[in-house]
Amino acid sequence: MSSASRTRNSRSSSTWRNWAGNVAARPVREARPASVQELADTVRTAAEEGLRVKTVGTGHSFTSIAATDGVLIRPDLLTGIRRIDRRELTVTVESGTPLKRLNTALAREGLSLTNMGDIMEQTVAGATSTGTHGTGRDSASIAAQIRELELVTADGRVLTCSEKENPEVFAAARIGLGALGVVSAITFVVEPIFLLTAREEPMTFDRVTSEFDAMHAENEHFEFYWFPHTGNCSTKRNNRSAGPAAPPGRVSGWIEDEFLSNGLFQVVNSIGRAVPSAVPAIAKVSSRALSARTYTDIPYKVFTSPRRVRFLEMEYALPREAAIAALRELKAMVDRSPLRVSFPVEVRTAPADDITLSTASGRESAYIAVHMYKGTPYRSYFTAAERIMTAHGGRPHWGKLHTRDAAYFAEAYPRFGEFTALRDRLDPERVFGNDYLRRVLGE
Image (cartoon, rainbow, N blue to C red; front, side):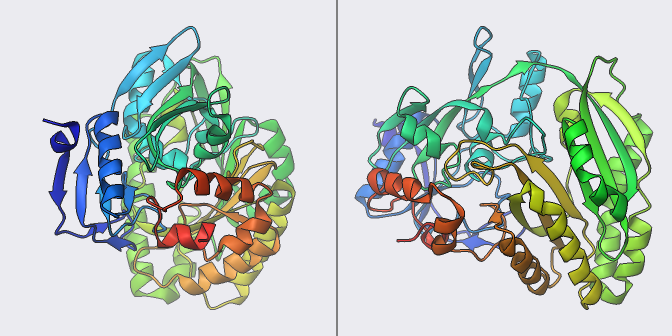
């Protein structure tokens, strides 16, 4: 029996939807390969049949980047750690492994990623391919921590890519948008596990914006949230600590992270959706609900938190020096508009990196993310926010809502042509294409 026939294939009669519920697709069939060979056979067979191929992880992208009308690959059997190299301090992991499983497995081995985003539900390939990031003065996105990756191309070849082997593919495929092939394994640089002390503190909008540069410079990881319709923010500073560990108390941690940030937040957003005029008053209460606290724990328990309230999101990376001006414009726009925004605006940073289509490629960046509760009208808010972000040379997150196209990206990314030329070479027939990639990368 061939590998292709052993691959778990099924005719698809169901509709796939992303986490937020705003994207749907009906593929011809689904496949669940359990090895890189089965994955390569799946891609090769689909290409021979003239079908397009996309891989979906946990569906945490808000764009249709993973949607397909052809073969939908589910990577839930491509999971687990292949190997840990303690001398080189690397870990090689199958592409379908959720970040949550990777983080807990690394912690058991006394290891950790250097930086990560604020949720860990995504698969490692889904997170890196769309440019998922946290916040950091010196440490960059998850993709910037890749030492090597394994890529299945449109003709079924398996490429190993690193700075030494297929370096031009490596430069682009770390954030490859699913356009260059299917990532089958990733090797991350890791380090011995360490402790972070988190300091969360309410702060006024005027203070945090006037002191932003200083707080960015003084902290390894700084971020803040501004609550629209108020002059209030919540700040978070994460810095390495000698210890000892002092995690949040079980009761106080539950109150902050589950009751206030998820349970009560769900309720107030539901009220705001039903009665939009109540949103400003609710925002004033919500912005004062979270109190100051300090705790110390291992990295993934500090960087990440549960996000159970569903929403839609747009995020733009701006040159860091432009971020506060853009945020002030955003606040002025909301203040003078009839918009009712119940979700806070998130601001994070990243150092420059060398990945071809990274939102931080070649420049220090600050990220401004706007959200709207699922089921509430979002287009007017996002359109107005996008107008401000693009005026400052913004680059949208590849997995979050935006309206930009290939012509815009050709101007926003100096190496855009390098990426599209590589795509022409690796996937001339657009086996991995879809409507979203046609818009953002061109024909």
